[in-house]
Length: 454
Image (cartoon, rainbow, N blue to C red):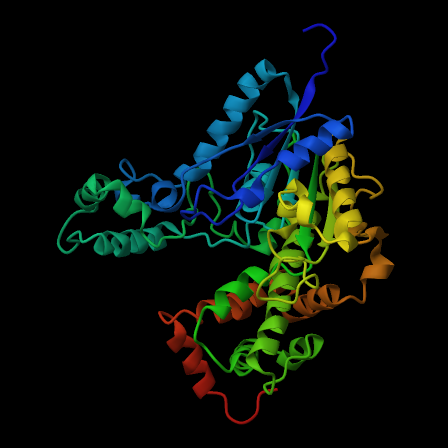
């Protein structure tokens, strides 16, 4: 139509892990966000894509790939963006000004698509919130094979003495509700066409990954307490003596364990609630902040893509397990951005949240994040959103913060592999062994550690 503005587009990825989740999630309602766009004279076309999750999206057997191919859920995402680029103009959108936004698992998906070579563009800008390829488990074909047999057995399918193809055919014929209800958190498959590298889900890999040439800019953002997702899981477990368990793992697997325990003031005498809060700060700083910095280091080597770093530090006023308003929890970044709870926001955080929303809307329009400079390894320019507004920090102001001290420690422990060592051998191992299925592994370490640990 003559005189009509060609509107930028924002496409949202699903935010939860690659598992089956409820469809009705009102806290992701973007109505307030889109209303703000109109109020600020920055209208957008908002689209939210779905893709297969759990076993339907990621259950795979390499010997039966014709029946259960790898990474169906990720291919669904690519198909969705192909559709959007083809048809968005019919909705008054602009196929040359698409911004993809993903949080948690959605951010991990974006990290893959941003860096995996593809000649045909999917979008021009990306907003990666509280997630990376590191956060989610990637399994090898052999690991997928073992998981396939485990899930088939749970479905009541006989697996002994049968070919993988026969078992796969019976899995496909199982009732769809039974497949959906499998307790299977889907994991992408490495050493595959889409993810050819075995070490794709590492921070060392992220430090070397270059963005696609068609990606104009990206925002990498982490919240200052993303470890709340681990806090939530751990609170539902029966494990005790958390500080002692964590310290034992550190002593067994690190050269200088006491330095890490000192940075976070973790002592074996800490009560479990106190210890868990501190340990989940380690989860935050290594698995989310560290992953974001790793991604920025890799992306900064490209002169084509402009990269921005954001810290979201607005406390969640609705938190149930943690002190209200004190922790910028996992998912609160995207929930506050979309505004489902605007009507009930406490007055003291409204300014920060509205500035957060205005900055993202402006970025969707222009591709620039004002007043933040483009990130570089030397400046480490970072935009911090707090409840009373925005602060622009640089290297000299960040250098002595707890996350940066943790990154320096990781470098000391293992060089370019240091963050992965901490994440896989210490943090993820601690989290995994809270599950009764793996708890014996932590008990073995505990029994081998004499005397006091911290």
